[in-house]
Length: 500
Image (spheres, helix red, strand yellow):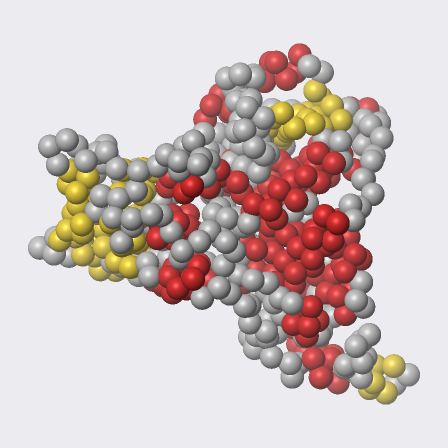
């Protein structure tokens, strides 16, 4: 691209000053040409042998020296295409340059101004498909933007544990806004609106805020200490958070309107699991991945009986699917007591698997057994209806389907069984319709998602906005953050129009 060419030419020759080419020197004394010679720094991790025995963080994070050295690789481009690849619109060169200035507080302020959850996003977002993909060094080896975001955010959260920052008190000068769901989209819109002076209340169905961050992502990928520290900043701003309230049941849209809320944001996610509809799927020992991960992650079933929520896991666990939820389910299973084998069963090849490459790699390292080009066709059970095996058939790839991926087709006479006493279905989630049914007039697609204006995130009902998975199906945390930012601007514009 022309922008890339200009950025690289500038890196190699310097900026033009007074008609002469001069090397551009950063606060560390390096020119851009020097930076291009520095190799990307790997992420230290627990060994696979150690980490499959615990729920502690797999990645150990950069130390100060490594983070500084990686920050030196940023070219501080005149045309920063990395920002174009970030749904949260973070000033990426700005926060990295502040690392080189040894000003982590400034770096964190830059991150936090654009992203309510930088420590979370630094760990779980697919930077390789977003900001790092558009980095000018992507063809060579992009700057490790996500790892630097994780470093800065976690370093400052640790610092604030010892020396709490000044609370960001913004006086309420505007209307009441209701946010339904305390996931990444809801938290983002709430924090952005609060900064604008709105009186914001979040209503959350579960007993803890965080949404999928709390119930879906295991602690070894997102430590709860980090997540809780990020979420505590919400209450610290004066945002009201009310848990154990199911919108559409214990609280309706009419109830909200009766409480003088002037706008509503729907951020209820996509927590309704899908199943295959194969014979025997209602056998004992068959879970949706959502239920399984909620029991383990949110309700700490891995620590039963110290925790109150049990979960049955046998010796041979099969997970159907190959997305990030499937990887989480299979890797969690390996860490549960008594499990001998954890399988991933997927009807396409590894190349078509939608999970992040990093998650696939970690699963392989830890001993997950992959059965690619394999399609379940029946759940076999005993006379007490407990699953004993998964009957499958071999697949091969045919012509591309509507998604552009080659369609898997069965290979005749290739049926076989996999011993299995726990089966986890991770083949996709849809929005739960309970919340939507409470709001008359919402536009709903055939996939069960809410239709919105892509610029303002307003639905077909004036004053009702939506974002995150409820509008696009299961997606990424950073996409939900981006939707939250758009919705906050949309709500402000809508309510400003009413005031005007």
